[in-house]
Image 1: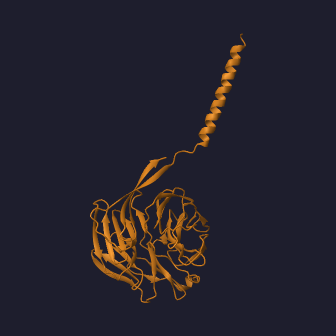
Image 2: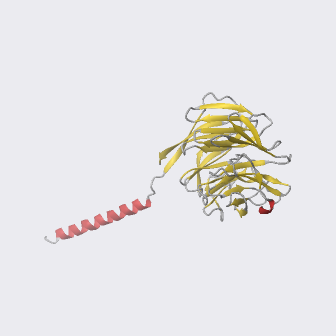
Image 3: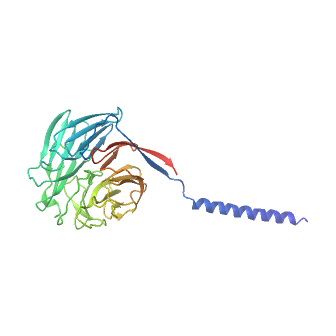
Length: 355
């Protein structure tokens, strides 16, 4: 009987070891819960109706929001006060982009007239006026040092790109010799003014569409440019890159598709090497007119038929909300604004939820 006790102990140890192995295997196969986000949407109290006006210009600087519309309306909203003011610059102005600075802001009217208007404490000044009636502007963006770039559709067979060194107070067209020749029918998209992005120390990107969907890149504040090909398909007129956002100089996302076919496929791409290579994203697709970097590896993209989120630098996307906007931006990774067609303006809030 003395041998029974050692045997029982040995068996018990084997069973315990097996249980530990099973537990370890199960634990290693289980994915940790991801800290996902949910979107809360609310109204701006007492905001009047802007039925028939489409909002695409949107920029947030700290507490202040600048929103611009297709009939010359400009709305200023302040998060801390939950208050707004409204200005009208004339229904002949069709604004598609806006950019705010500490002491002034810029408004981009896309055509007839194609202009950049500077507003400072209620005083308006045209700082760039496109004399050619065929001019069509698509978007503008700025680096932290106040330098900026502005672009429009190619004009008379040449790319239309301007640079500024003084927060948009003055503009100079980029030397044509430093630009590549546009493809036939190549053009940009002014759906949200965000198909152009300044992404670091002199690094900037502009997205286009044509027989190929291409990106122009500068590394010297717009003085010289190179071209990058992307795998985003070009199926018909109106297809291409509508918006871009970069976490840093190398990691970025581009979205688009075709606004006439909002359920189309292959509308999102990403890069991890500054656009040397672009890859198609996985997950939710469909036309998207704006994308914005939230924090870390998180991006949000939106379009007329919905809003999506990526937690992995644009590699894959999941559905966030059925409401869609023309443009979307967040002030601090939490509070934001979404704007769209027929007077659509909403307050947004991102909140964490564990799954």
